[in-house]
Length: 250
Image (cartoon, rainbow, N blue to C red; front, side):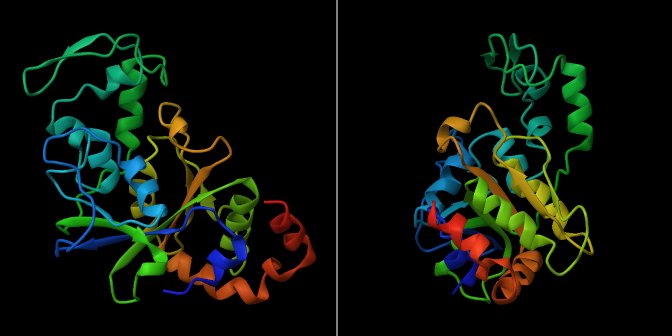
């Protein structure tokens, strides 16, 4: 699928289409069932030109399952996320194994504060069997795209945030919720259900920032917003000298 926005931004990493489907892809990479892995890393793999996909047995970790829309995988797997994100320690997992979280990630002061975050997290149980991530350029309009996930530098992120408001004139056309790097998908699923969905800025996860260049953040657009932004490209600031100056320094 052609993308005037991709061309105008000059991104290093291709935008990634997130597709929900009941058909298992005939090609692509997938975690082995029961094996740990990082969904955010797999999304970067897709941004570099490959197809990756996930199902309810291959989501890498409980946080990855939550981000992909496979429900509250922390509770289902008995994973003490409230301890991992805060003070750490040793805990018994749902499978009976012991897990040493050491000093914890210290993203929250206490487990109780993490539980507040969990109470607000938009857990979702998608109906599809598979979540597929592939370069947007390799998709067609009939593939059931639900989100478009970008990895961008500050100039490109500024452009995406600005373009999200081009047709709306709203103050808050984007949101920047905290979570794991892959949780941008869960937040964007929730935005997709809104009458005017917002873009989601992400990749604030300190434990996974080492997966990307220091200046990279993510921007995830529900597909309705993505189409709106694509249509706005010819008439927007992306054709002005101000943007061309920024584009030239990338």
